Image 1: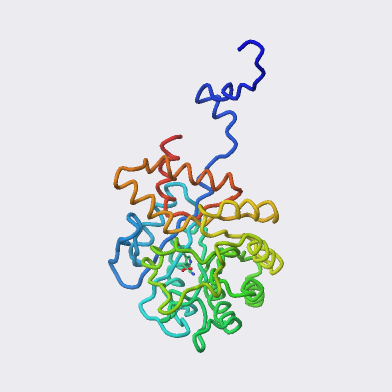
Image 2: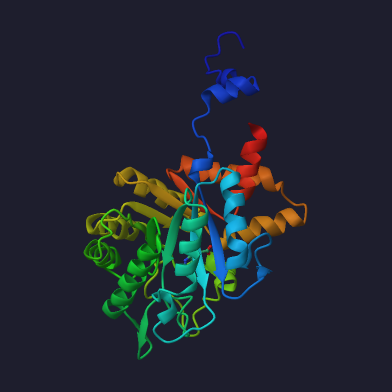
Amino acid sequence: MRDLQFARHRRLRTSQSMRALVRETHLQHTDLIYPIFVVEGNGVKNEVASMPGVYQISLDYLTEEMKEVRHLGIQSVIIFGVPQEKDAVGSQAYCDQGIVQQAIRQVKRDVPELTVIADTCLCQYTDHGHCGVVKEGEIVNDESLELLVQTAVSQAKAGADIIAPSNMMDGFVAAIRRGLDEAGYVHTPIMSYAVKYASSFYGPFRDAAHSSPQFGDRRAYQMDPANRLEAIREAQSDVEEGADFLIVKPALAYLDIMRDVKNRFPLPVVAYNVSGEYSMIKAAAQNGWVNEQEIVLEKLTAMKRAGCDLIITYFAKDVAKWLNEKQ
Ligand code: PBG
C-alpha cells in the first residue's frame, strides 16, 4: 500500500469526541414546534388512532399539556382547532369564541412564554372539508381570501404570536398581511405554508383534525408532487407578499425542495414533518422493525442538513426528552 495516494477520511471519525468536533448539523430544542389539536367539550383526551401518542384534547387539559411542553424545553406550538359545528363557510374558524381562539387566549394567559402559532385554514371548519369557499364544485379563490383574513385577524386578536396560513389560495399572504396591518397587528409575523404539496402523507392528520374533503381532492390548490420549479414560484410570491417564514410541506420526501428554498430566499425555512411521516415510523417502531429514537433523530437532522431552520413535528416532545437525556 506504500505508494498509494488516498485520503484518510476515517481520521475524523476515530472517537465520539472527534466526531462531535466535526459535526456540521445540530438539532436543538429551539428548532422544534409542537402541533396540538384542541377539541370542544370537557375531559376529552382522545388518542388519534392512526397517530399513537398524539391526542385531541379539550381546554381543561390544555394548560397542563402546555406546561409540560415548556418544561421539556420546547418554546413553540402550533394549534389546530377541531370544532364541533361545521358549515359551508367555516364560521367557527373566524368566530371570537371559536375553539382555537379560546385555546390561544388560554395558553397566552397560562403559559405566556410559549410562542403560539395559529394554523389559518378553513378545512377543519367547513362541512365539505375544503380549504375555501365552494361554488359549483369549485374552490373559489378570492372569496376564500376574505374568510381567511377574518380568521387570521381573530387569531391575532386572541393573542396568536404568529399566523400560519395553510390553505394555498393565491394571494393569501398579501391579503392576510394587509388585514393584520389594518387591524393593528403590524408586528404579527406570517409563517406561510408557501410550498405545500397535494400529498398522501396527510392522511392521519385528516383523522386527527376531521378535515377530509367530502368530495374530490385538493389538487386544484395544493401542488403537484412532481414539480420543483413551481415550488420556487410559490415561495417567491409569498416572499414578495410579505411572508416572514416559509414552510415546506411535507418534509421527508421533499428535502430537495427544502434546499432549493433555503438557497434562494433569505428567510427562515420551516419543515413540516407531517402526520404520515410520523405514523410510518410509529408503526414500524411498534413492530420492533426500527429503532424509533435513532431513526427520528436521523431524519430530523437530515431536514436541518437540507436547509430548514425549524421543524414542526409530532415527535417534538420525544425529541426534547432525548436531547435532555443526552445533556
Ligand atoms: C390544513 C392542514 C393540513 C395539514 C396541516 N394543515 C391538511 C391538509 O392539507 O389536508 C397536514 C398536516 C399533517 O399531515 O401533519 N390545510
